[in-house]
Length: 153
Ligand SMILES: [Zn+2]
Ligand SMILES: [Zn+2]
Ligand SMILES: [Zn+2]
Image 1: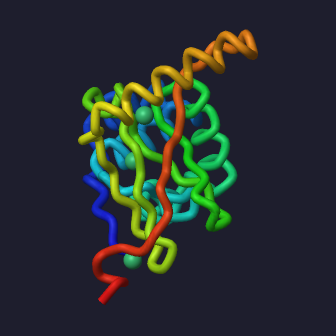
Image 2: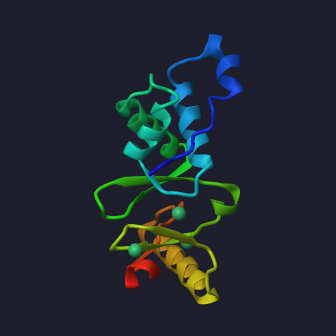
């Protein structure tokens, strides 16, 4: 997969004096994820930013992804193919979107055109679970598995 990574931006040069090992990877990953609608694995993220930031190692990428997930800036998904995938949480995605996953080619489709019944069900389920388990629910992942249009041919 070819990913476009913008040239290192001015922040890096401007902040070179204050450049620390922590802000570098964090900014680079946020920059990459905010400009793609793809759901990328840590290895794909590493490959994409490595070209521009050769100093950032795979371990740092993993660690930074964990941190950004905990900070609530990106979403982590596990689609059952053995990789965690990461997605930037944009403002319009802040609400929520669900996924359709092709089990043949692994393509992931985002959708947020929910039918009313779907939304009502999700809300009701969250409410019930929160009460039953005295659990503060912060979000959910909903994915439907199947075969995409191209693979059905
Ligand atoms: Zn949802
Ligand atoms: Zn497919
Ligand atoms: Zn998504």
